[in-house]
Image (spheres, rainbow, N blue to C red):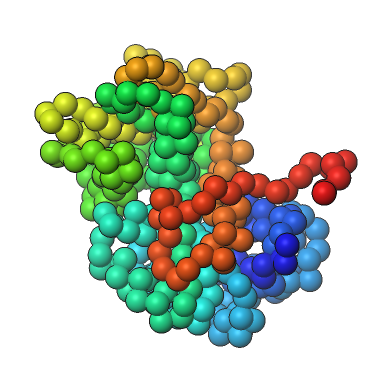
Length: 356
């Protein structure tokens, strides 16, 4: 297989993990790195990723990176509340024929249900440049769409599907994202991620696209949320949170068909295991604190669950689009939603294994 030449943009928590995956992937060649922080400009990409020297030096010169004419841009910039900026970062590459994979612009993860003011400019850029884009992630993304759809291959009659993310984020350092959940706020405050257009758009599209895949017509999608506190102070990585303030949130979106729940999506985040003890908890393995669960209600009934500790779960987010790069580069131009993607998987093998 010819190695695909890749440039990476974004080296935050997710982006650094993604950069490392690109460097180590046997089918990819890192040829450029775009960074925002001045302290990273001029550094070797391997020093940023913790892999050892690569000879690729980080820059903020977009024109120089475009001049490399890579096969693909792996974009890991934060997109919450900055969708216009993400489009501005992605579109010049698509217009020049550079394919894009991203963990960011979630409106194109399900383009039919995404906000069209962001979807349509990307679609035009794909056609103009003859390039493709695949937006992915874990949740929304593979763990609440691809994972449930994969296990439906062993299903029979399906009456209802329930998908959930259940996580303890006490060691997560993404303060901007955690603030959106309302952590540290009084219990009565509305969590922005649940009540803002961005949160509604991202997560309602998960419910609606799942119904599309199953061929189910939804009557409506409802949204409810609740918060919980502890009676003692805690000090997660997020920062000190006094007793009585929000340390757990649970959000449910339900898609109804024929007046009955068909797809129930739950997003449950805690900063302490003792918070909201009557809410759902994961069950797979010891030491895991992030779980994605799918329950198929029907004939037969069955449950499947992914359990992973927090830091590996962060690395899973960029792994999905990075592993997709060869497929995206071979795809016809346009926005690739999960239904237009063939199966793909990692080819990064452990030490001592011999490649065929």
